Length: 355
Image 1 (cartoon, one colour):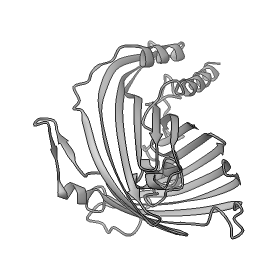
Image 2 (spheres, rainbow, N blue to C red):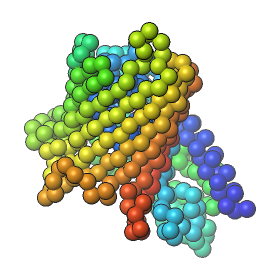
Image 3 (cartoon, rainbow, N blue to C red):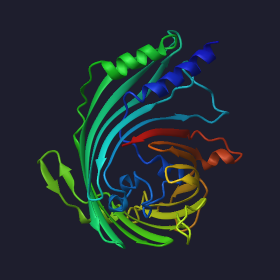
Image 4 (cartoon, one colour):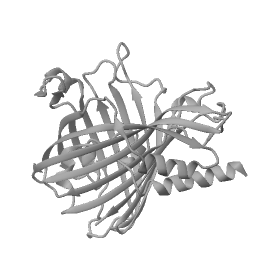
């Protein structure tokens, strides 16, 4: 009975995330192994490569809500208290976009530093409220597009205690309606730029997430050429046509992508690839499945090659007119081997309403 009550509470937490949430990383991107720098065929593609903004349809206003959490390997010992909740994140994002500019206002509620108290049947967290504003600009022509973004924000915190017998009320009242305090963390500021070359069936993208920085001590904008090179990423994508030769909607669209990220960073460089099969019924009615793989390739090992110790990803998306649902599952590749792994599976879901 307690287990059933726990899963019912989890369902209500997912619904509660519709009331308040934060910066939605493209879940479709996550489902494709975090690859897709060269893709521009979805409304949120510019969150991966800012140049993709120029390829989107005319004016768009969207509300994104999301939920994500992680889960231990089935063979691992489960938490004694609230085993269905680890360190959840709720996200909420308002975006207004045109092909030339986009403004996103974001709230994010993340639960970290989990501590269980089996004697009291409760779990304590530190909840962080991250607020962010992001501005995207883009321009180009039929083949070439360039874009840039700047984002800044601040973080507040508060302690949260969830009682196993009252988890929903505790969560909503403390996370959403209680006072937060300055965290002492420095304000964040980052900029990046991207380039996108698009042809029928093929596209190529370039991105750096370190165009300019901000020095909190001197309050000055800084520029680091080495950091820009370290965080340089390139991607390729191949896709079948959305319409056939008779200008009729194709029933199936196949997309593949290959990214090489942080190519100048000896510790964080990675290879990512993925694919998607979309079944189209109408322009605004489709179902799509995604799969991909991502692996870090630090020195002294070779960049090209695989140890198969990365992350396998799977995703499912569905659109019904103005509503888009996306989900992604990120599973450590070691879970598929005989060796037990303490790495956790991550699950992410977003619901988007587009005006």
